[in-house]
Image 1 (cartoon, one colour):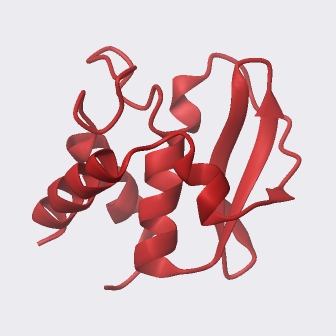
Image 2 (image 1 turned 90 degrees about the vertical axis):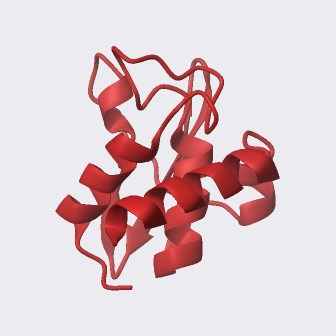
Length: 113
């Protein structure tokens, strides 16, 4: 699967739902989606998993070929002061269930075809 950030962002926005994160809302679909999204992007496109500690908990995102990609940044009202702390799948999985990841994977792949 070819990595096109704009295409990925568009497919994710359509794929996110209450089934992929319990905090999801129609008004702010990226809410609560950072763990499951970072895991899926890492699974499909490789790169690194990163996080930044925020008052509400750790925020997860990716770095691919040296470039930071935070596909869920739109959930926040303020810009993030990224710290780019290296992390791993086990850490990110603490905020996403295997069912949520499976739901996002299926919905994302359906929108990418």
